[in-house]
View (cartoon, rainbow, N blue to C red):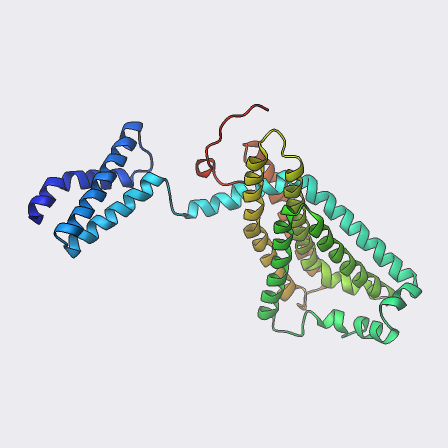
Length: 334
């Protein structure tokens, strides 16, 4: 094979294939032409490899065929636009659409924790079944375990530990949605018990204001993220029971992608709460200032979820991937 003649004969086709592969949108005729040229180029590559191997030309054709294959099969790479779309459209839309799940969960959990705290604070016989008087003193005294928990480790490592732990809890809630929901209720129950016991023991020791001053700067955002994860997981579980007008497999695919995709957004929220817990909660700022920072962070999140999310949902967004990246669906009768 004369390589110069071979290249001269097919150079125009290869250039045309390269041009079509680089385009974002193609007409029907151009798409057909792309497929035809791709098939020819693969044949040219095989012919070159068997008859007259040339490393330079072979590498050039291999790259061209790989790019054309990506264009033909519709694969694409992620871009900064995808990240921006996730945080401005997909994540807030999913938060808003699931609000009827996580908002009631938040209210019920807080009320249940408050009830447990009141019960422990006002019933010494119940406290005695949980901790001895010495243990209670060690937990609640000035410089005790509840207070030094936020300061006995370097802030950076503490933030990483808190973030990892909370992100794992949120991820569990999201994944447990496929079971439908029973493990999520257990996670919520443990969360309610831990919060209620801490509040109750500190209230019994007369140190509730201090405990709230340590909890609220980061706890508002942290607990909200856990409630959101639980709500998303429970909604996914309910999709198994009641998929609505969609086919069950279609509903599970859409809601599953939206739910699992929320792990990234919730990890971001929990990262912020971890920073607050490591650097704001134990800081020398006045208690009112630390609580104010936590309240501002919580309000900003709620505005993000309920205002920006409402706008995104009104545009038909489900929290799923972009419509162009979803599979085609065959119309079915409701």
